[in-house]
Amino acid sequence: MSELKVIRKNEAKSWHEDDELCHLYREDDQMVFGTSYLEPGKIGAVDPGHANGKEVFYCALGKVIVEFSKGTTIELSAGDAVIIPETEPHKLINKFDEPTLIVWSLAPPDPK
Image 1: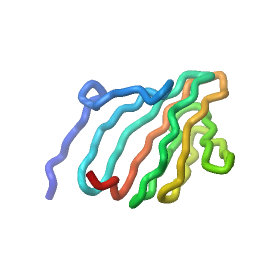
Image 2: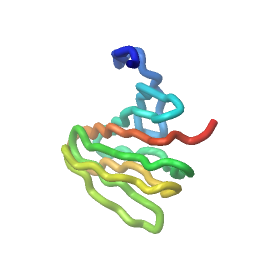
Image 3: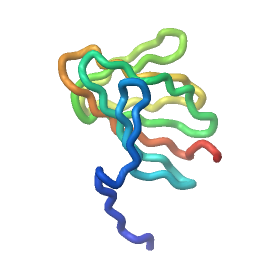
């Protein structure tokens, strides 16, 4: 059995992708897991998609627009999730009056 491991927010790797504040909690050969936070009126960077894995976005706080290639958009509210197919470019847009927190995971991760 694997060892139980707690990853505290201050231990997660943090970076910005445009206005999107990202935290990476886990990355190994099986999955990548993290969060993205956007203040109201902010836009994240375009993620070009992932060749070998599906990405799941779960909206944990607020609302967000997820924009895909060809101009397709969906709106997620707290409690909603979307599965993003392989290779599909996407970005987060918070055009609402409250912050947005997206919890995301990619499995399997992109090869290194």
